[in-house]
Length: 432
Length: 185
Image (tube, each protein chain N blue to C red):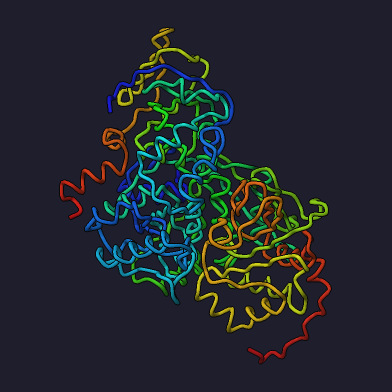
């Protein structure tokens, strides 16, 4: 019997020929990524740990509470800087040009290495599965432990395979495909997810990462894509580490294999409080007026996401009474969005473009919601209280749907706005 | 930690969501100052405060009634939901010695073990145990004995390295012991 991708990576990291679902295995951790919240003033790392197994395998990214929102956050960041220096950690992303949301940084700096294990004390770490890396969120103590010892443990889970076929309809993105999955099949507790098929191969790395990042919301263990030429070229350009991707065996054992015609999916929305069996096409949501719209987070802060938001609002105004907040996934994306005129387009429309942070997605130090307010967001989570008051309502959608809703002041199908645009003039063949 | 745990059962049906039934998330936010909170509070203080909210959504007096070392027994939705580990602190703070359930998820199981709280999946536990039964649970041997009824159930035993984490009282205490012995100096 063959092995799935997750089984192969865990077997390799455990130094074994094979592993079986249900087994508990100790594995070598390729990268342990710590975040600013790892350094709260009571942190263990503050004084007791003077050495980690291999500083080259530890990454520190400041993202949740930057720039410091209060004195206690400032103390945490200060401790983080001291620890990075003391432990000799070179891969340190402090406030500045190479800072960003940790999962965007993990992707953009090649920390997600195909065929290896990565852990980080943030739920959306499964994001790095887009790069054929068995990555998942772990508790705060466990991330510190993995950094110190270079090891952790996993219970091997069975795998569900998704075959993505067809071509998406106009204005339908990876976020909509995820919301379709979450609405149709619900939770994937104690289960790995594999994405394969012709459309999986056609997706950009960023779009793949939107899909794997969101798998935290259906409680998947690992969410993995195969490594193709795109993946390998991306990682090779960013790391000198040797790596060997894994592919599922043809006779791998799956708990289920599900085929999705992505061409049959319309723009989708998750209703408030959970994405699990709680999504529907935007046309069926009814008339929902909004107070806030948000595009950002580790799931939707990519350049493509910002470009889509800018395309929708270009030449239009954000509706009166609506705050439209846009947060790039990293400062590098911010800079590129600036170069391409996206920040200007967004700002002219009335949107606010912030520095890169987990901020509004987690109701942290900006963009929090008051009781009774309604938000439509292209971010990760919508459980009660996620973005501020537990009495606020949070709908989840794609960047296109969110931007269109910001313009209309109510949740709308983005095709309503995008289709009204005049078609672009044909470019000459020699144009760049 | 004793490897044979002894205590009485408290049986709960239905979903036990970490953010609601086990310990409402807003109680954790009050403790830490919100998601991503950085408010200083010692671990002991967190145990005490969160322990007073443990399972009160399903049994308002549970924190007063439960005795140190007692077991929470649950169904397939035990520890449902997010990766928030305050629920594990709450259970420990209330004095719960272990959670015995039909099934759980990795987030809850991992967080619990790392906080020094065994979570054991035992098929049939809900049908063979009722509230008040006296139980013996052998983590290394993989057996649950219902002393009250005589019923015996088996489960996949914990591997040695997880027992070591539980013995130390959780990952941080283990790391602290190792740090004291000079492992990370």
